[in-house]
Length: 545
Image (cartoon, rainbow, N blue to C red):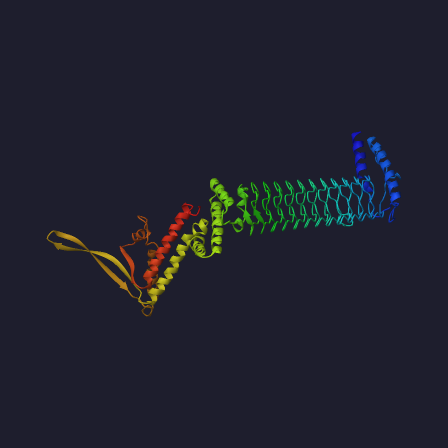
């Protein structure tokens, strides 16, 4: 018995769909009906509805062959006033209702397939569970209408439901099916689209401000330039949706699925992205100012050129590390980047030093850019910071780079010193100093006296012709470069002294005069700076202030 009742209910519910034929066969097809005749049709239809209700209570299906049933398929009803009429379950497929007035009209489960409702007034009309296959609702007024569980999809010929520029403000589209519908430039402000099916729907330039789209299905929907200010998109599915240039100011996007979605240059100011899924989404050029990103999933999200100035609250730290966030930091001259500093403290707490360093770099590089734009002494300080800290170690991101630069400079200075010694440019002289000990007699017996001797070599280019001489000069230049690089030390930390102890005998190289002496001193200063910078960035955080 239960199965039979369920079967008859489905048959009754789906019966209007079975009536959709390729060619409309209604008695009023392409005919203009008078208002008096229309009133009689509606009156007879009310009797049919009463009889149908009794039949369904007995478990029987509706009788659509009954002459009392309103079959207005293909009827010409332009500009007709149908306000307040009960046309529930009526057949209005292919009917022409252009500029018709259907205020508070009951069209529950009515068939409006391929009907023309262009510029019709459907304010507060009941279209719940109505069939609107390929219906033309261009510029229609559907404000405060009830379209819950209505079906608005393309017909078998591929003709989509056209709601272009329609007024659907405060409309109820709860669980409505709107696949491949054209809603471009429509007004859906304050509309209820809870659990609505909007896959691949065209919502470009649509006004959805304050609309309720909770759990709505918007996969691959086109929301380009759409206005979603203060809209509720909680738990909505926007996988691969197009939200380029969309306005989502103060929108609720908590737990929304934006996987592979495009939000280029979208405005998400003060939006709520709590637990939102932004996996591989494209937010290039988007604006996330005072946006809540608590526990937001950012796996491989494109944040290039994004203005990223979030509120307090931490995203998913593991996924955020996979983004190109360095290009997206927004630095305010007055408050800096407090959200990013909170991120940095969180990564520091869990011991992810690489992200801690990257966030420090991101903050410092934006601070550097801000100072450069100020000009004057700020610009000079910005340039020095770039040379001394950015190029050398990227504010601690690359702590090993100072050592690499040091080794490269040693090689470069070897070549410079070798060329100088080989050519004798401007009388370059380099000397080797060592101590020899001799014994002398005195009244007290044998005693040692240390005598320092010095050898100097002036080797002009013209006198050096053999390979062995060039190799010898290269060895001297290499030793002098190493000695100059590590000559300056601190207390007992003197690498130059340690290197001298590795020699077979005690001696040192010195330049008595000329440009090479000045260059050696400069190399010593640069080297001690690079060593100190390496030590500070490797074992500390000198830029976290």
